[in-house]
Length: 369
Image (cartoon, rainbow, N blue to C red; front, side):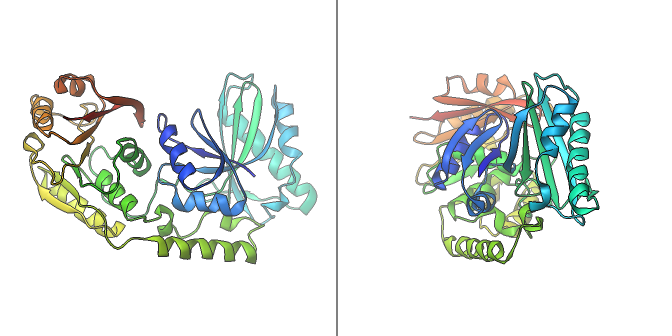
């Protein structure tokens, strides 16, 4: 099967490296995600283990679609009975660029019509649409008049781990946090600190990664478990994968600390860490006076940007002075404003352009000597 793992813009290199570590085949980064190949077990393993992916999509068909009729005919040509029955519910979402068809809602509607018309022809009845909780999610991407139709293997977005019931004012998605930690270069052995932890997402993702906690273990079921083709063999396969994931968890990991000046943020972090099943050192501390880690480790943080949080005028300068004193440490800053980089007063050793929602950020990594 040909599969595609979606990624937040800019995190494709992190997702590529992650899928290669999972020993998946044909891994190739592309705009918006990473291609790979495999069978249904490989797709399930990606859903269970990927910390960075947003969705895992199975490619069903690809064809030229220069207009509405060509789109309809291409989707209608697929035998959808492998995945759907008359009792199945479905939802269709669409994206498009550089094509004659320019309205994503129209593309989604035309795709839905083709799917249900084909099923009605074969089954004598048509499935229903359920946009909130469909049994089968269909995605169609139209680029340069070529349509690619996918099935959503995971179902709901994989960034939803099930533990983050409490968030702050500007929450960082779990899969973006996982990408930031990975791109920081952290080795999962030295200590790690987030000195402006908010709801604790960065620290929790780091601790869970170090302990080899499969992020999909907390999910009640994946999308493919609701497909018409999900039989006893598939159920046995998934049960074995889940058992292997539970057995892979480590008992102990490196020290991961989360600090903040806001007591409410610390309370949220403690509760989220408890629900995620990880142990953090959670303490009240000012990011303008960070104590060195022993041994020297990695600082990863997401300072307030100003777009959604009101930053103190001297915050960046104070944090930068504190960070520059941490000799031997690695510092990774998800900077949503150039003011953070200017405050550091030195060029980063490496950087990536990432998007936190609609906000374009730079992940700045400094190796302090």
